[in-house]
Image (cartoon, rainbow, N blue to C red; front, side):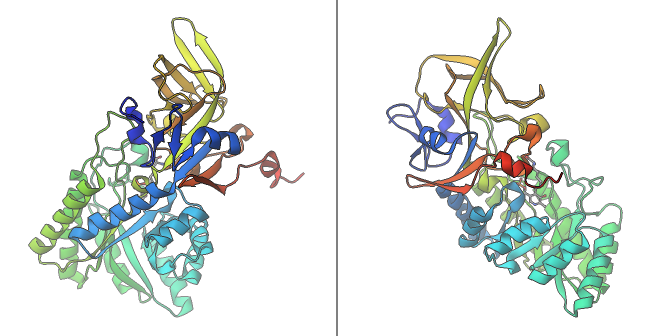
Length: 441
Ligand code: LLP
C-alpha cells in the first residue's frame, strides 16, 4: 500500500501501515477492529516500537560511552506490563513515588537499577525504598539528606546516593516543566552555595555514600546546547569538590527531557543526535578537566514511550457553527489527555477508518468534558468526518494516561499492547463500579 499520501503515518508507531480499505494498522492490528473489540477511548502501545526505543538509547549512548545506564523515567507511563518490558530490555528505572516503586517491585524489577527521585519523599516512601533495596536515592534537599541519613542509620546499613543539583540553565521548555533554573523547586542550586554545602554534608553523613550528581533541566528539551552547558557547569563543580572535599564523581546523571516530534513540522534531535553530542561533550570535558570517566546515567521517558502510544476515539456529535468553526466531538478528552489544555500541546490526527479518503475539511477535535478548554486538536485538516468514525492521535504514549483523571466521573480508558497482529489488554477500562468502589456512605 502506497502510504506516501499520508505523511502523518511517520508520527505513528514504527509498525504503522494502511490496508486497502484505508484503515490504520498498528502492530499488524486493524485499529478499527480494536476500537470495536475493546471500546473507546482506547490507548494502544506498540511493543516493537517500545523495545526498539529502549535498544536505540542503549546502543547509541553505549557506542561512545560504554558505561552508560539507561533508566526509563516511569512517570511518562508505567504499568505492570510496560515495567516487564523495560526489565526484559535491561533498562534501569527512575521512580518518583512509593507507587511507581511498588509497580516495579511487583514485576521483580531489579531494584539495584532503580533510582528514587522526588523533591518531597516521605519517610514512609524512603523506608519502603530501603526495605526493597533500591540502588540509588537521588537526594533533593537538606531535609531529605538528614532524614535519610537517620533512617539508614537505624538499620545499620549504608545507602548509595546522588545529589540533585540545579545548574541554573534554562532549557526553554514550557514553564511548568522547566526544572534547571535556580528558582526551581527541585534540587540544590550551584549559584547559592547550597550545592557545595550539600556535598559537604553528604560526605560527612556517616550512613550515606555519595556517588555523584544528577541534574534534569526540563522536558522536552529540543536543543542540545542546554545539556552541554549544564554538563560543563556540573563537571567543573565536581572538579572543585574533588579538590576541596576529596569527592570522586563515579556517576553522572544528566536526566531526561529528550524531545520527540509531535507534529509534522516539528524538528527535534534524534536519539543518535543526542547521544553523539552528549557523550562527545562528556568525554571532552572529562579529559579536559582531568577527571576520571564517570558512569553516565540518562533518564528518557517521553522518547521511549511517546511514539509507541496511540489514542483512539470515536466521533459522536459534529457541530458546525456556520462560517466560524466545525467541531468534531469525541468520547474522551482532558480526562485522558490533559496536555493540550495544560501546556498548549499540539498533536496531529488521522481518521483511522478513512486514511486514504481524498475529500478533506478543517475541523477542531473537541473532547466531551465539561470545560471549553477541552480541545484535543485545533483546526486540523482531516478526511471528512462522520459520527462513528475513529480518530487516531499519534504520539500519545507519554504523560497522557499517567496524568489522566476521573473528571466528570469518566472511567479511565483501556490500554492494549499490540504485537504481530494480536492485541492484548494490559489495563482494563475502568467501570462505573470502580469509580464508586472507594466511596463510603
Ligand atoms: N528525569 C527526571 C528527574 C524528570 O523529572 C523527568 C520528567 C524525566 C527524567 C523524564 O523526562 P522525559 O524524558 O520524559 O521528557 N507532564 C509533562 C512532562 C513532565 C516531565 C516531568 N519530569 C508533559 O506532559 O510534557
